[in-house]
Image 1 (tube, rainbow over the protein chains, first blue to last red):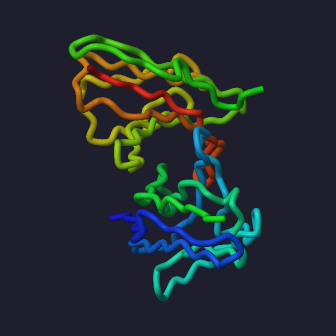
Image 2 (cartoon, rainbow over the protein chains, first blue to last red):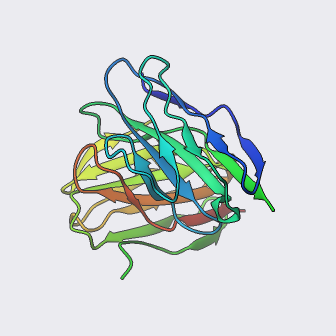
Length: 109
Length: 112
């Protein structure tokens, strides 16, 4: 079974502080992992995916197969990072994204 | 040009009514999806179509019926609406398996 867990429903940090949004997954094979972001009153947007190894808006995420984690990190949070963040998994050959419960990130000035 | 567009954005209706939500994508993608986001913001897949063919049908009441007239459109019809159907419904599309999705802006359905 494919499952994604985001243990923090809410996360609040101060501007300029480091941010880490946790994501753990359960899948027996090699999954594709994604982070999506939903800013207030906007649609869900793809933030990054693990195979591209990009840094988008200063965010990075590393797939740790040993810990089955894909935590999202940013060294210095900005107010515009306040949003809902979803971690998602797609199993090999699967045809759907399975989402975590989401973490609402608030950056305080 | 909006890539994935849904109409309407908001829908308020009474219990027992039948309603439809439309989705169109102009990206040339082969696969389209419907997701439901509940009041706790949890996103769960409902249906997926690939080139007009149903490929995923999660455990969804049969009051929900998707229809894909062509690969650019995926509509969702809901019969006999219930209070528990109140949610935000998102349409999405992807070019191929393993690709990221492009989402529509959502349809907030409120059943009263």
